[in-house]
Length: 272
Length: 333
Image (cartoon, rainbow over all chains, first blue to last red; front, side):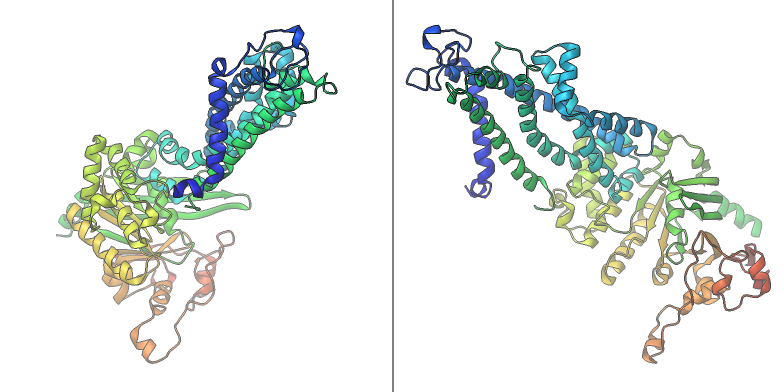
């Protein structure tokens, strides 16, 4: 109980996030309608007892579409952030540990180039070369986010590798790889995981943005960005049709930020 | 008779450093941190290396383990022969096997030499796993044994502690346990007691002596504390500006120092007599010269009361003043 009271914001965040994840995973049980089912007699209805969030221009149930869209948006966010975390921290470790070597300069150079592009432009480049779709959206987000992980993990390694215990580890004959595994990774993992949780909300909003401008998930597949784009055209006729998906996005982002903020404090050894 | 003695000491020889030079290539120029030093160490003996800050003591210690950060540092030339093998010629993989198993190191600040987020039992057993091929459980058993040996109470509970839960003296004991866990032939202690208070210092030094007798390890003790040297060392090297100024058995250094620098060091040790008489502590005037801008000739000449014209022009050689006593000063050439 005491732990829960101490970390109330994080518990709320976790509950909020778990809630939306469970609803998304169990989407077929929760959604009253097929998200793609068109019902032209029920177009642009406001929220009522049959359609909890109303219907869109084609008479599709918005509540069902949001739930099924959550499957797509959340999995894109989680998978692409995990991929860029693994990729980025691996390269960041190398770039930080062999700071003077050429390989490090090469990694930083590539990182800087990628980070100089706005993320939407990166998404556009991927969409233009490989086409739109769920997998390509994940790829675009991974490409956009891994340089960030390179930067933070490199910065963390640069400070950790100067510690005496790294020299001490070398003085008992540890190999570089073992130093990575035993000393460096555990020391920087808290930073990386916290940033991954916070950036996961960025990744989800990036998916929304890409899908919204037609460079991400392509309609009629429901993702939060696609729902927004579909319904924005009829904003003046049925404004709530736009606001409901926005609430789902805001809910998720807020949940992740609540978790991430508190996590940062807990995992920081100096705060313990 | 003398021949026999030298033969015997030759077979006991553990470490021989020949003409070791280490440079640092910095942006403002090349620094000769160690400018050609020679010394040797027999099995089971303790060698003290003393000198002021920045004279190359730590660089010597790191050079022997080849842990000089490179770049900027680089071991330029020389030989470091450990048990007949020149370790400067070993590959990185072979060198890793030497570290920990044959040479190990203790550092100045025990608080920073342990990983703060790792339980100490795990840290020590890492070292044991590396070199002895024991299982995790076996290594942990050995860890408890080592911790017991360095005088930690309740070692079976202590292995689950984080470093910050222990005092500085305890942490240094843990470091010693880690350094000795694979029975190294040579232990390099880089100012092992500087960060500890005096009573703990005495305990740690006693412990090191006890373990040295038990395991038969040789120790290179890097320090600026003459008292520690007198207590521990058999032979002493006095370093200044990356050079050996005087080397002798510890009794000779204290009874009859030759080099003006060593004499200066001895005079700056506070003694009971001088404290009672309320005399001011003697000091060596001036500062250690910057390694970028060393005097030509003898490197100590600009602070030396006895220097004369020759000292300013030419650097003196290291010559024997008695069979076991070497000194680098024009006064004795």
